[in-house]
Image (cartoon, rainbow, N blue to C red; front, side):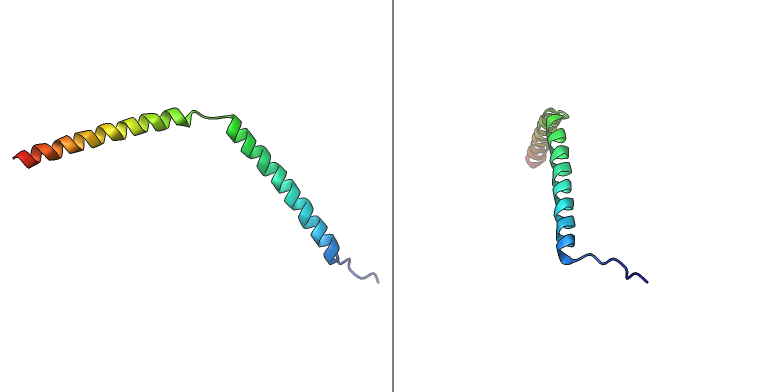
Length: 69
């Protein structure tokens, strides 16, 4: 009868280091791909900021009109 194969601590450490390296490489590739393929969020953010500023001006002018009454 053959005893079941049990990995030692050294082998487990080597396996975990290898998995960490693979995860790091995959994470790095994903990060670089996302960074290179910019989806134009900067323009959309600028548009939203302009819209927020317009709404604040409308709100402020409405508050001034109600204060005068």
